[in-house]
Length: 344
Ligand code: UDP
Ligand code: MG
Image 1: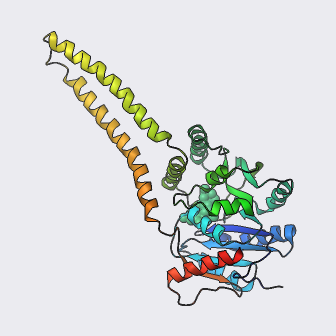
Image 2: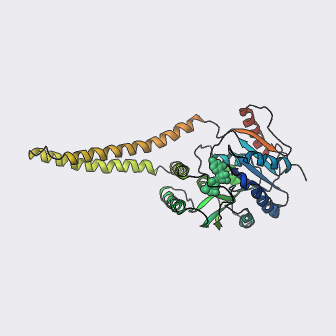
């Protein structure tokens, strides 16, 4: 079997990029199914990039063990847990394929669909994204909140983000180069890919149950992702804030007129309840508006720091970089950059 060297430009037809958090029970099955699916499509011209996102179970070791024996595997161990979207970005930076398949580690998105995706791409599409028809084994709350979120997002943003899609998709190299050149820190990758445009098409599929383990997207993380999506693609909430300000300004004017009339009529003491209500409502509206401003301001602040998106602890592959040496983390980062540049 030919050895793949990470630091040499390669002609790899297909990269599968998979962020993995605590997925130890599913790794072997994932590896088996993704390998089979890739081999069926492109023979030996593929790589599987597994990004270990600060896992705390045995995921890291399980992946390293596989990477030590199979030259098609590249294991990227991040310095800590950065979250799904950043881990995915790390894998997308490092992968070298001409076509790139994004997949979850839990086998909810069947890797076997890559065949149909490749066929659509052969027709000239740049992005083939999976669109969920049915989702098995997910709570009604997750289904309802996801449905609501996608519909709200579509109303708010200028970009056409397809409903019921995740990150499961096949992308062309030129699409990925555009994506990799987008530096923002708050990443909602499916939205960023939609923003790029080019020719995109949906592939309907049924989302399966997790193969093992439980979701790493509890309500709080889902909410954060939704906030990232809204704030990175739309300034509608800021507009909403000023509209709210205007509405309450007009209401305030009426209230002022009423107060004035009461004063003339000499009828000023009663009305404590209404006054208290007005103060409370106005107070909370002001806080809401300030909160919206704060969300944007905070994000701007974080962006201006221009820290690297992620740091790599080590990269393990059959023969290559194996940056296991005692390099400080910033050197590793440079190493990854060299690798990415060498890839051309
Ligand atoms: N994931 C990750 N970092 C995290 C959380 C999740 O890399 O902090 C990975 C996880 O291993 C999986 C993918 O992101 O491959 C999607 O996560 P999950 O299946 O928990 O989300 P769900 O499908 O429930 O939305
Ligand atoms: Mg999942």
